Image (cartoon, rainbow, N blue to C red; front, side):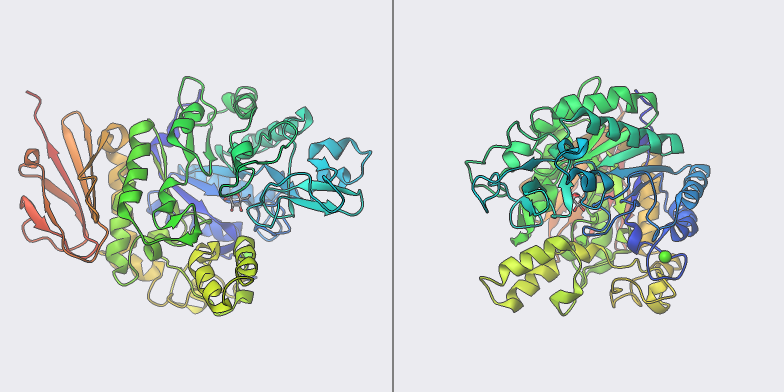
Length: 551
Ligand code: GLC
Ligand code: CA
């Protein structure tokens, strides 16, 4: 086992296309990343997760890979990648790659070869005859299409794709496929990377015979391919044969994961994964996905936070990534932009686990509203739109898309008030949010009270605190509809994080033990820092610290 270095670091996720354009073609790239490494260092970042950098036809923006051991020409080449890794390492920033092996692009050479029925690659994917002519082999749903199967005219059979039809599911039961996965892992580890974020990794083992799903809940088939029959075996194989030989770590993405099941992956002496990205706290304002919106319910959010904090020793902590709308626009308030941005930072950065900050989150980037469906790129949004307009008015469906689409998180990072938000000297590949003159990194750099500087201070504090690293987690007033309050306690020191998720005043009494607590962070001026009773202002947050002497 490695040294668990990932427990002492805060990660930053880069979605490369929109991070920073270094060569002036309107597309983010590794030259831009190289230029921003000092900025990430100044934020206190100790690791970077790169969303896919590999060659890809971009049906799903990099999550449809056509070559696992190269860099997409839009982003640079292996030489600049290596320079980024070396410079990052010199700054004590580790690098993890996105490992997307549930599926490949249909333009990957393995799949091209696989279309030939007599090719040895045929069995690398799931090819099947239909039940009847014109009918797919089973009734599974796809996340990005209507139905998980597409018919290939050339070979007269169907192929399985849980996502887009250009993201073809690999047959992980084939040992040759697993050998390739291990080769890919080694390739990047030998180049110097420090670990992987494993894309929908809990889906890679499909049930024998790919049977119909007899129940019809949410995504049909998911019950059967989520944590499928050989999942632990395959993850252990990757672990023992490759990962154990490097001081690296792996975080798995796991949609629909429950805490109970999560323990079978991350607990024990030789766990499959070091930690997990679950989705439970991303459904506090929706049912299952953002496309089934509900009013925001803090109690749902708190239940999800606390359930995972209590059940697991270590969690992957996040509020944003490239798959979800911006969190200020969801759980916070665009009106109380800075206040709610800071409060949201406190709501998760002091929990137990390894935090991930998504690009632009640290400056409080918000959702974008584009006028026409043609302006959007996210294949999942397009599926929902074209299905939706069969039943409802186009205006209504468009307004749902505007709130729910992943494109909200994929607008270019707002670096300054210059043209194109300083992201590029050319017209960016995707629109910049028009609020960039007000919300940008440079303006916040110069303002000691900015959200960016709040993130810096909180990350610096977190990195030096043994209580944040080791302390017990406890939630106070779990039934409160608007306040989220938690403590972390270690060796006589207690930290208390208070977070108001409303613009309405709420009364809160500090625990008696707090005595003359020290106020470490707040997002408003505080007159009497250790008053025992306080009334919160809109989206107020405070962090207190006190010591309890051991009797
Ligand atoms: C993961 C990725 C998402 C992608 C999907 C299919 O959920 O985060 O962006 O669309 O897997 O690869
Ligand atoms: Ca570029």
